[in-house]
Structure formats: structure tokens, C-alpha cells
Image (cartoon, rainbow, N blue to C red; front, side):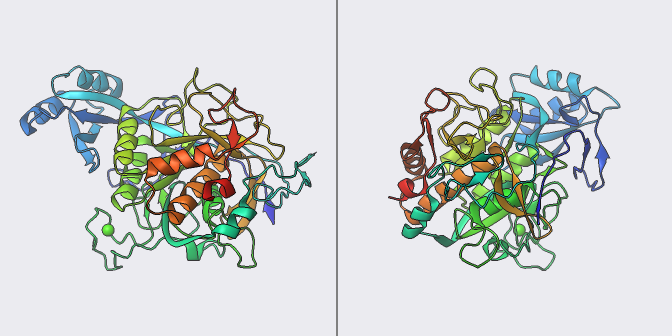
Length: 431
Ligand code: CA
């Protein structure tokens, strides 16, 4: 039943559906950004005429705009006239009207390949049994069982899973998948949010209303946050009851910043107060930072992974993990002995808290279960705890919830690696 999982990062067949194209397109392996698109933010003084004359310099066309950042646009460049690199620098030079122009970078899922082990959910309640090759440590977990004595979640509370999709009909998830009450399946955009028939989230890769998960990564993350609890089957998520909003922007292990921003915007405009973002990469994007900041202005906590390259991200940043924003929680990974996972990134300033991320058992696609490792899994635990506290104490602001979750970390002596030095605790957060 339990399968090992490998993300093939050497596959460059990204399925990116923009401009009406929904087929797999091969991308040149040397580019870490979209070969025809630029993210551009206008200065507020720019008039329509100014914008048109700036865009004409690079033969650019606006492909999409955004609601939470009204001056941000995604521009399609005609490569018959100018290279993407020249187009970006030419746009950036128009400083009177252009605040910034940047490449539309790719980001990646942050998990690591795993051997096959059955771990019996040590992350929730560690009884000291063997996990992988080494015995566990009793109590090296997120204190979930004691936390569940206090609260098991609110079936109406929504958590955005911004990832590779979620298997919508997984038997251990299906009842906890969000349903858009404002939308009806009639071929129109009933709730006028820009997405037609989006009854269960959106697929920003295929541009359709079926954010299923061909890869298994998002389904695994979703199961940690909110697999149905106490149903006599499979695994239990941190939230036994909740609503998981699947927003798919990662295909074949990677996705575009423009789609990540669109997914975050989708969640925020639906009033969602927490998202799980188990992805990132080395390239900085001002547009992504601006979008996460705007989400924070709307009482939203953005939980993200520190990454798995065994490095200090205060010195060698990973984005969005290293961004210095008040509404981000960046998560490192610990193992079943309360030790920093061998591959986990760290950073006393950038990384806030740790959570289980080694041999974590959760749901996978094909209605199955699998064991995965990585800071992706760690971030999902923290997103789950944030959601539990928000659902339990609906009057607390996002900032108050963030402070409580960080202050209630179980100290495991990792203070030289991460800000709180501790592992997230469901029990202490709820107390
Ligand atoms: Ca809609």
C-alpha cells in the first residue's frame, strides 16, 4: 500500500496553460523563467496611454491582471521582435511609469525522494517505535492527540492548499474538500470571481475547474492539514474537520510565480485566512512579495517551507521562505528524534518554527497513502495548527494567531537554527 515517491525535477515538460494553449510544452532546460512572459507593476501615475506606449516598446500584450495588486500585470512578449531578457530590461528602464519588471520565475515543490517505510503517523503521536532505520523518541511530535481532546476542527473553516492540486475524491479527504457555495455548474461564472464553474477551487495550470492532483504532492500536504479524522480509515489530519481549498499551480514539480499569485489572490478574495505553500526557489520576485504583503493586510497567514538544501537561508535565501514579512511563517523540518532533518534548510532570522518532515505518512493520489519527507510536509503541519487555532478562536487576528503558534512551540534546543528553537505544538497552541 505505501509507495515511495520521487519528484522528477529533471523533467522539463511543464504543462502550462496560458494563451489558450493547454498542451504540454517543452521548456528549455537552462531557463528558470517563462520564455515569453514578464511580471510588471505600474506606477500609480501611469495612464492608459502611458501603459500602451511602454508596452509598444517591447511588442507586449497584457495577458492578465490582478485584483489584490491592481497595478500588477502579466505581459506576453512577442519574441519575433525582442528577446525576453532585453524586453525585461527595457521595461525596467521606464522608471517613470514602471515600478518593476521581472521575469516570471518558476518555483518548485519542496519535498525529497524517499525510501519505503511505514511510519504510523509518528508526527501526531510519537510512541518511540522505529521510524525508518532509527527508533523514535517518545513525545517528539506535535502533541496532536492531547490537542484533539480540546478541539478537532471546524467543518466550515477553509484552508487554501496552493500546490499541485488535491485528489478531490480521495476517500480520506473528499468530505473535507471545500465547495464554493457561490458557484453553480452551469457554464457561467456565477460568483463573478473570474473563474467559471469553480465549484471546488481552480487549476491554474490547465485553466479549468478540476484541480485534481496527477503528482501526489498536494494530496499529501492536504492530508497532513486535514485528512478526515476518526473515520476508521487511513490517516488523520491535524484538522479532523475542515474545508481544504485546492488551488493547483504546480505541474510536473514546478509552477509559475504569476499563477502562485493568482492562486493566493483567489483564496484571499474568498476570505480564506491561511494558506499552505510548500514550494519555492532561489529567485526573488517583488511581485510575489507584494502579493503576500497584500494578503497580510487582509488578515491572511502564509505558511511556507524553508526548503531542503541543507543551507542557511539567512545567508543564501530561498523565496518566499526568506521574505521578511510579518504574515509569513517559515517552517523547517525535524525528524522523529526532535533533530533538524538532515536536508532541512535553517536560518535564525528567516525560519520561524519546525515541524515533522521525515517519513511522514499521508494521503496520496489514486486513493492511496504514501510516506514523504521534506519541509513541504513540515509546513503542512504548521498550516494545520494555524487553522485549528483560527477555527477554535475566530476572534483572534491572523497576527495574534501567528504569535500564539510561535510562542507555544515545544522547545527542542534548535535556537541557533530557527527563531523559536522549537517544534509546533497543537496542544500548546490551543491551550
Ligand atoms: Ca466563479
